[in-house]
Image 1 (cartoon, one colour):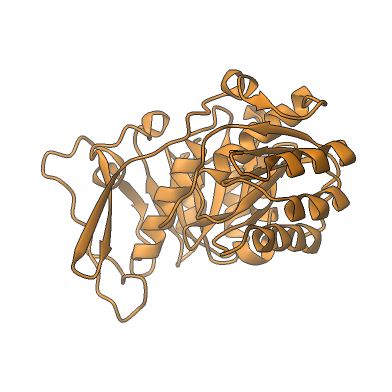
Image 2 (cartoon, one colour):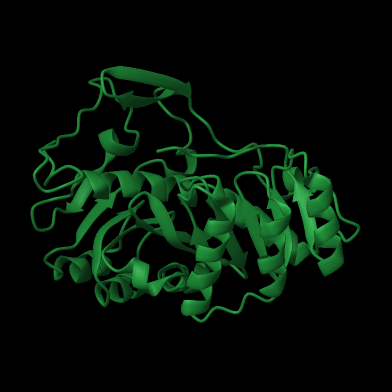
Length: 316
């Protein structure tokens, strides 16, 4: 399938799928609306990454993506599907402009109306109501794809991820976090005297899922069914934390009682700004020689912390 263009407008691009494809992701996409010029390579890549995120969640979830990273993720109840979109968009409204969105639920009329009131480039969802398609059809530049098998999205047809570095090819095993639900998180090591509350534990889980699917080096702050901020792709972790905190404040989010997930171990200077922002729970891999100092600092501020023993870097 020819694409509008690749990463940049002057780069030609096309999609190739196996002849014996079993309907997974690209091979199984049905374009309900092609849009002006069709999708770009970035739209496809962002759609894939969005679907990896929402596939972790059983409840209705939306992920707003920009350049392979989520700017917002939201979870809703079945009777208010539009809430998932609104929470995801409002995670960082400035960054959401011109996004690609992935859903793990059928897009209905209300969700479609909310989408078309913003500038969205591309939608990936398991299905659309007839009313939703009619509304989406009125937006010239909007593209909409129907995706099969969202529940089993992690079951890849190719066992390796590939990276091309000039004339060199790196293959590595595909990866997904071992933390599949609350029971797995409860089995992780609580290294502080104060254990997380049930609400904090849920927020830790959701932040960890999103953190494990975004570009490293970074963090995710989560509270009450929405990502309040994502700091990602930084060379230093304190920089990622500062970016996340700045974005959350700019968007008017209340961080009191929120949880933070980090894809790599934390250091002592990472904790102080989080404590100042009233973050009360942290989930991280652990494993640094300075873990003792980090735990001591959390204890001073009443922050609960879990070690997963699993680093979740993503280099893409």
